[in-house]
Length: 189
Image (cartoon, rainbow, N blue to C red; front, side):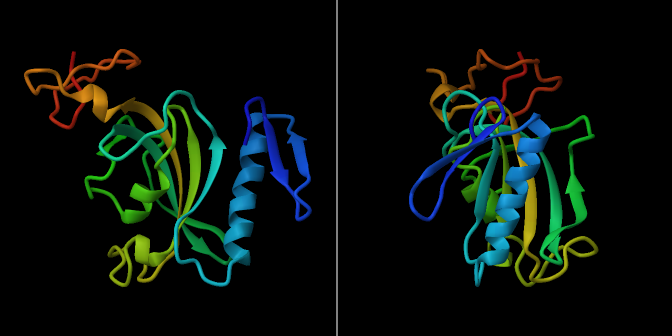
């Protein structure tokens, strides 16, 4: 995935190719299909498959960074995107998480590493890296492979987070102040 609706790839002879798409949506949809095809062509999915849809800007996120994320989750069914089981895209609240804290499924912890602010990525997560044999009652059947489209809306790098008094320091690039004080790395000012 490249800026301005380009994608580049190597073929089997290591020759470089570029494709230019008419729109961002066309480029994103193509990239999603590439990731689904990778999943369907692998004999057994034993790790998280990641496909960037939009690159974003700035530094790649690492463990310890605090993020605000918009996401949609689908069940992987019939070799493609199945039923949506969770999403916060049309809701007011973004998901706040600290990467590496173990508060989200292992596939997210792994699959979001290196993403940048404004970046979007498709993650295909095998059951062992998601909810495993227990699933989620009424929403995710046991042993389900999951697909997530994740977009990082805000980032607070771990390096910026602590001032000399140990309290969090507000990051300069936050587009909007948080309406409520919270203790998860985002400052309310």
